[in-house]
Structure formats: structure tokens, C-alpha cells
Length: 291
Image 1 (tube, rainbow, N blue to C red):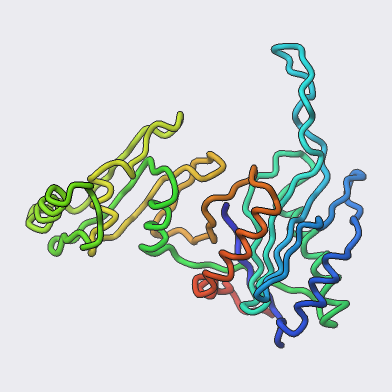
Image 2 (cartoon, helix red, strand yellow):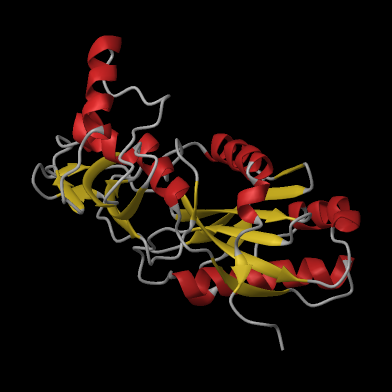
């Protein structure tokens, strides 16, 4: 599950208001939306380690028919509410919002952010006597981002730029299970003096068959001590094809949860990940000064 990260603009300490903000958000009633569709913060809300994690649920008109046209049989309707997971880190003053698709015609990313901002603004005005403001953030992709994706997702394309010298695979890398084969393979890479400067590997994407994580070549490339990973294509937990290049700006990614995960499980996982990865979250910096 990917999250957009925003920097909250507030001059003073937010942690001191944590419990009051949590209580206010937990007690908020349903809010009226457009076309008689309401929205709310569900009861699945958590406050721990100065992080408020919750789910914004929005009513919508389903685009899916309740009748299977092929079999002419009744199909249970999908949930009339669509959920977006949110985390507000009071210590780091960062707002994390789930990056997802909004298939219903009456929902969109902009609508979602407007509603979320309105609810958070009510809380800030009541508790902090301040307006809720935030800015977009950016963070350039680095080698650890590519390595994280390689470890957790099915990889279908990998593009790596090599250096002329120093083609050493890291000592802890396990390319092959057999230790003798593994060491001989690493030695061969270290002795490579060819003029090869870039490698592109591809595997079948759709159908769930291809995965470069099973390739000794891909394992070797990602574990080179000196290299520049230029681009990687992968399939996320929702089965959506994604790509990341060296020039892209990153989102905050949490593996192991997706849109089908139980909300209570997702909330707890998100809260723990945000707490354990605060150093990474600090690297998401506002793109401009607040005026």
C-alpha cells in the first residue's frame, strides 16, 4: 500500500494536543457530501506513539451491477462505502494518505483530500485554535528504495547502470543456496573487466508468471556494491503494475497490506510502520515554503 506524504504546517508542538485531537476525531459524526453521499471517520481509529491512524470512509454510487449478466444471477452488491487509510504523525508533523484509485464517478483524489482537510481543520480549530494547513512533499528515489521494492514485490523489469570497475556483489548476498556455487559466482562478477555499462532484464508481466527475483542475474545486479539502479517495474499488493525510476519522487510504501486487507489490521500495520520508519518519513520535505 502506497501513501502520499504531506508536511503539516504548525509552529508549535502537536504532541501535547494528541489525546484531544484523537478524541475529537473519534467523536466526529457523519459529514454530508455531494449527491446525498455522506462520509465519516470509522470506529477503526488508533492513537499510539503520537500517531493517529484512521480510516476515512466515503459513500458512493457503485459502478458494479448487482446482476451477473453472463449467468443472469444475483451478485451481492459491493460495499456502498470506499475507504482511505490515513496516518497523522504528530511528532514528525506529517500526514500520510493512502494513494489509491477512486473508480466511482462521485469520488476522486481531490474530493478525498478536500473532505479530509475539512475534518482535520475542524479538529485543529477546536483543539489547537489553529487552521489545518499542509504542503506537498518530495523525496528522490535512492538505492534503498529500489532494494525495498525488489525484496517485497514481483519484479518484471530491472535496468541497472554499471561502473567500469568494482563489480563486487555484497558479502551477505545469497544468489545461490549452495555456498560453493555462490562464492564462485561472486568471484566471476568481481573479475569481470568488460566494457558492459548497462543491463536491462525483463520478465512477463501480466498473468503472474514472471518474477526477476528468481533470476541470479537480477539478484546479482541489485546486490552490487557499486551500481546505479535506473528503473524498476513491479506489481504491487493490489495487483497493479507500477514503476520507479531514478528521477521519480517516492511515495511511502508499506508491504503486506492492500485494499482487501481488513481495516483494523491495516490500521495497526500502518501505525507500526510509521513509528518504526520515522527516519525515512523525515526525508519527505515540503516542496515550497508556506506563505
